[in-house]
Image 1 (cartoon, rainbow, N blue to C red):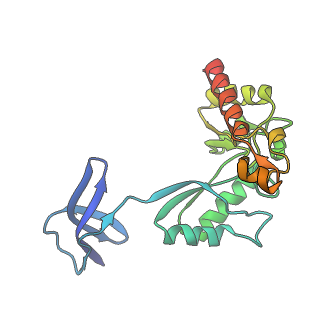
Image 2: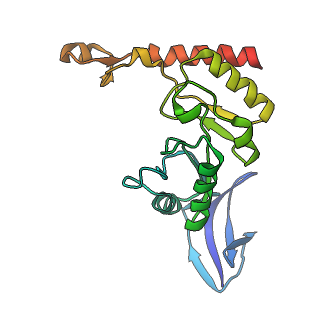
Length: 221
């Protein structure tokens, strides 16, 4: 079965072109003008993008299937035009070991709707006390390491993680928050938080972590 999508604005590596796009057997087989197919869909005025990639998806499986599963998250992503998502490691158990990484990847393959790419933890259990086995996880294909909703508070641990990431050619993602400055915070720290008498979250909590990690990145190269 072949379908031509006629007259859309198609985003390519070279830029945006107004053209026809032919899909045959589920694969793009041609982009150009005056292309023919068994079925024609007029998409004049619409834009065709390559598949989106979500770099920060919470699929919650394993451990929090009451809120989301890899299958339901994949369905939502596919409906929104995503062809790949990176699954955050704040699962239970956390994605700090090979079996959990492989489980997440396998569940994504079983769902069969888009590519589910598991990320790995920077520290064991996302607790900020000891580094996760980054080399072991990198060997099974993990390319992004993050403690997601928990910032790595210990500067020495973060320095070591940066050093290992350089050797392993992987990426680190930091949750930029000095947690001692945000304890109990329920809103942004401002005049309104003072008037309401509630604990505020100061901007400096993020800025200090960003500054620290910029300097650590300079140090580790």
